[in-house]
Image (cartoon, rainbow, N blue to C red; front, side):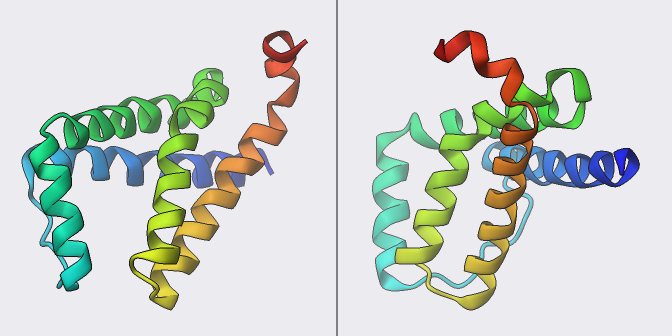
Length: 125
């Protein structure tokens, strides 16, 4: 079970590391966007600091998520970005594939948070 958990967490972390690096290096092709998505991404681009912030959080969170010793912190760091991804896929890009992938990743994140719940006790008690 430990090996399966490590592989799942490694893949999860690498996905976020890849997504974060793409926000800086722009090496992945952009999918065809709807008109609403074009407006949304244009607005985010005008803000200027939002994409670098999200990219940095994805890189740091992904790296933390890979290593078992820092996985609990990585799960908390990635959680706000993960909520944004799920909400975006549910309301702005309602494709079955996008929603399914984001929900699976969200459940992995919640699983790791629940698995490390004793590490968070000091924060909430």
